[in-house]
Length: 97
Image 1 (cartoon, rainbow, N blue to C red):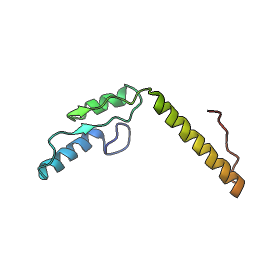
Image 2: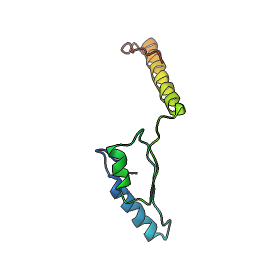
Image 3: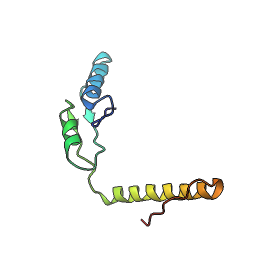
């Protein structure tokens, strides 16, 4: 695993480590980087510059992805509301999604 932002290791280092492990174990000959970004931009360019054999496109704006994000927000709000009722934790902000 590598990071295009500020985390470490960076993608270039992760790709090189994968190549080194594969070579040492006579494993796979190609390294693929799967982009979990939403759109093209600086971070996607960093992935492309990593030295990987293949880099996937960004996830984009598929309706299923938007639905997944909305469901995660709903779940987080519901959990916070339960915690508030049961334990008196701070009142949550409610979102209409």
